[in-house]
Length: 296
Image (cartoon, rainbow, N blue to C red; front, top):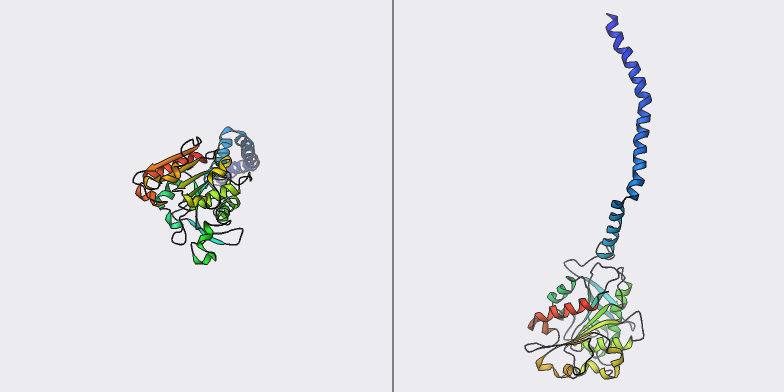
């Protein structure tokens, strides 16, 4: 009766001893395989490709929250402060592209107009092209600005509104390239745009890459004359957009215009940003122009 009970015990003892010696070596071998596998993966092309892919995505649209994110369904409302202390409310539409370009939108005459002049459809066309947008009130658009509406387009300070937008973009987490910014001016928003270009002509780090004049006119030249600034303006892509009814000022520059200047006349067009509603095709023409202008 004892033999059957004794034999399994004799068998189990050697097996447990064998496992005692084998298991540590097995763990060590498994660990060695993991260790030796890790360098192989690190040096492998697949892992390198994943790393570089992630870097590329980071450069384009991937970014931590609150830093360099693309626009959501609504813009971020920001406050710009000009060099002379004026606070301007603006809508910022981020592209999520680090070091990219952007468009600054300057509305029609204040106080009867403000940044709401620019239709959502036009801004959508820009963001669809990965173009960041800052759509800002100009000084005098609201009483809280503390300045008169005329300061936006008469006198020496209106251009500081555009500069505040440029400075915001340059200081943003996305680090926008402030040499790849297009200014879009509507009606006497063209005054601010033109004055900014003239004032920053000697600044290599801050200057418009291109201009869009939505119905420029005599008001555009309130502070200075276009023809006196041709050395600055001739190399600059400028898109003149106007209706036949208001063509005279823009057409005055068409004869002998430099090749970067483009003239869009619309027979059924309207004034300033109202052009976009009257001729929807003009939105695509302007958006395509901006996309081409800010290309690296």
